[in-house]
Amino acid sequence: MPWLAYGTAGLISYSHLVLHRHFASDVIVGVALGNSIGRMVWARAHGEKGSVPGQIGPIFDPAHKSHGVEWSYNW
Image (cartoon, rainbow, N blue to C red; front, side, top):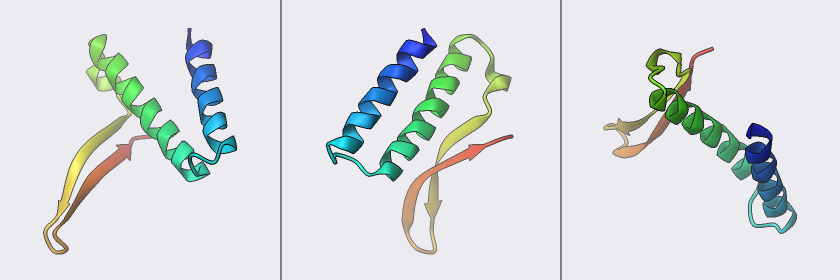
């Protein structure tokens, strides 16, 4: 099953690049986010909370009054 999911995602990413719908950086960030979110969902669904290597969370910078999303990955 993983080869089907990764193969489909790879073909879609390739088509977006060829058709100039996204930049390469968009695809790279999408791969990182998709892989990280997928691993977190899988681990939580199977009760493996300690095995999740990455975390996504909100951030706020009061000095610049800006906000965003932070992604940290533990090696």
